[in-house]
Amino acid sequence: MQSPHHAVTQRFDAESLKIFTARHGLPSDAALAAVVALGRLRVVTEGTAIHRSGDPFRSVFFVTSGAAKRSLVQEDGREQILGFPMPGDILGMEAIDAGAHSTTVIALDLCAIIEIPFAAIEALAAENPAVARFLFHRMSAALRDEHGWMAALGLLNADERVAAFLLDLSQRFSARGFSAQRFMMRMTRAEIGSFLGLTLETVSRVFSRFQKLGLLNVTRRDVELLDMAALGRLAHSQALH
Image (tube, rainbow, N blue to C red; front, side, top):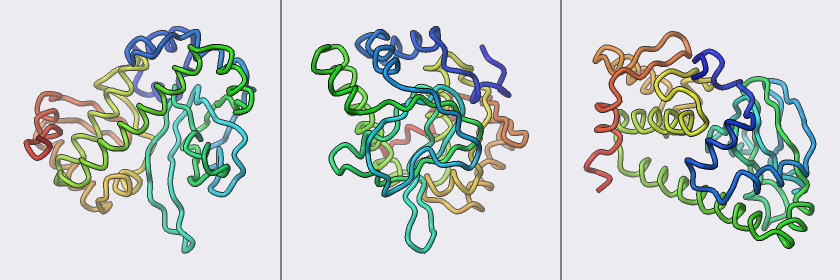
């Protein structure tokens, strides 16, 4: 497993690709490889946009290393975090119907992405059914995740939301071949709060309480989950059933 200090910035290599597609039941890593081969590499520095709301939709973006945040930015500058893309994620597909991006994605550290023209993907999918199935899988998974978080934010209290967030990160890291228990969070507590519908102060209190209870250990942004079972009981509260 990768060191928790390097898990987020680790390049999503061929072996990681195989692990990811196998664990997520995707049709084949060959389909993803064929899509990625259509694009070109871009390196995006911390704080720089991968795409912004209102940009014309021409490409999707496959994250190979680094971490980012996806958000809606209001006219007055307020930001609502919608998610935290990581290696293996494809960004921008929500803009297919509108022809313009409705969200902004900002790099949280140095990111490497593959920018893939969507017209090229459409042409390949018309010739290769495995590529079309791969795209359907990705869009279906994105909808399922979105619905899951909508339910969580409506039903769970602060402790349960933070536990669910930590376990979701754990599962996403594990699916990419990294440690499920030790990782670095590139997002700030305020950004976590925006995503979970909680204040910065509430997120900080929950992290402190979890640490006192022995559920986790936090050193700056390095996190070690010490009691996965207890976090799981919180994250899968009876409120969800």
